[in-house]
Amino acid sequence: MAEFYTTTTAPEHKVLIRGEQQLVAIRNYTITNSAEFSNSGGDGRQIMSVISFLESSAVGVQAMIDTPAISQIAKNINNDQSYDIITAATSLIDKINVVVSDLLELIPKSGPYVLLFTVSGTDLVPRQFTASQLSPLIIKLDEIAAMIP
Image (cartoon, rainbow, N blue to C red):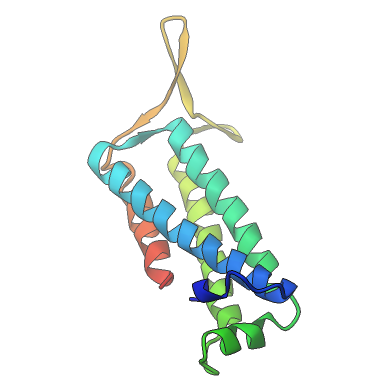
């Protein structure tokens, strides 16, 4: 990736650098959450946090690939004319959208509403999910991480 260009002033280069930093953040986030969910499961707040992070990350990656001439800039910076950042980023966005959709399917619902909390006595507490219940999510988080070099 293009970390060595962090001092550039060209706006397109800055967009690419921010985009690639976003990709690293996505990879790190998915690896961390996959490991945490594998070890101890998770709760409704954590699941919504993953959904929120993935959705906002997809928007950031889309902004990067919408930048004019980003494809050629990425090829030049990476010194690889076969590097296709548009296809790679689009595939990642598509995968993120599938994961978010699948993740929402894992959460129990009452009508159109997801049930992220339960009532315990008089308290509203986050619904707990075991590692086994989250295993489809864990696999998909690992797949996202594997898409990012």
